[in-house]
Image (cartoon, rainbow, N blue to C red):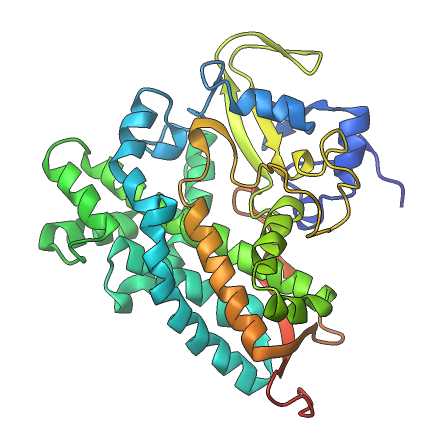
Length: 398
């Protein structure tokens, strides 16, 4: 089947599941593609230089793409005020001690996978691990963490409806109400760890620096984005290991290889493929005129493979010279949790490579790609895998 630019439809689940054939086509034929998203016109950017220009110019390209009181949709100076409240919790040094928490958790969870011989890379490992970690980071009682996971799946639908000026579905509205009651209840009863991130947000709330809505949105964003991004990262790493069996051995022999492997996964299979901005004035970008008030969609994953920056950019090569990628964005809205995501990914792969001699796809069982939501995410809903234990090379997996 021959693809054309016209086949690139932003809210098509098939495109979300496998957008990669379109990216070279877009960069070459339509680097600024005029399209639409759920009935609204928008401009889709696919070249790295154009995307970087947008990310580094928040004055022209605003993040206020939804009427929601959230760090994600804030511009300076409000963005800086909000981000500063929790930034100290997410530095590289601040998250380093979390390795003592994520390591044992990953070992417990992956031991069960190895013992079974077959597992779902998402449901049995990546998702429960990141849910547990975000609960610990926020300081939420562990027995209540899974409640939030269920609600956050619905909140993507809620956010999209609000962004488009539509009425959310009853289920999405209920999820929004439930998560608001949950976080406000924790703050009211002080049912959180005193040194955790939710305690910081509660302190700003009591000081009048956050209202109730901002508190809920902030806590929800930290949990939802942190869980989703890192679940996709670990799942995408497991998928690549199932395609590259020798890399498990190399991780055991060269521990530093784990980091370069993760960075190449982030470059070639980032958790988020698209982000959105809105223009505050008429602007020329990539040779195209974009009017004030227009939605701009940035294809981060396309930028990460642009041949103007990356030689053989379509090829997965963990030994390529280090280059900046856009998996965590750039500029003032660069991902707050990037160091935590890397730490969780690094620890997960250390555990996996230390326990598994081989990870492979389950024959005749296809992974289920992640589709829907805001159509920004890339990864798997389900990733069936089989594993052979390192200490028992002769045991057949079932």
